Image 1 (cartoon, helix red, strand yellow):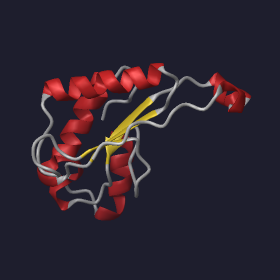
Image 2 (image 1 turned 180 degrees about the horizontal axis):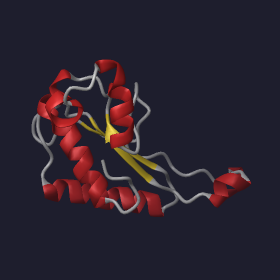
Image 3 (image 1 turned 90 degrees about the vertical axis):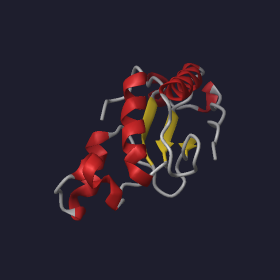
Image 4 (image 1 turned 60 degrees about the vertical axis):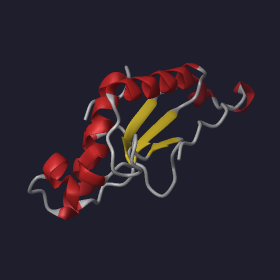
Length: 133
């Protein structure tokens, strides 16, 4: 399931502080409490600290549908990894939407086998204004 970004609001509806900010691309994972991520992100970190770890690894975390683009897996829903060319295409789309004046939120929900962690980190390296995980 992919959700395209909402259309930007007109400049007359934006506050002065909103006009002063530059649209950004945010990326991360859909959620953060997955046992399968221990090997990819958490190691021996106690579960009570997983949100802290995940929130420092990515520029954003999705909770309950607060997304624009949600990537569920390249070939198997929730269970497959995205290829380099596919991630580059998504990064190009995200840059285009940002350049149109939209904040862009991209979340990886292909949680099985830790693919979301790896893909979100790779995507963050591909976009020019997201903090690498």
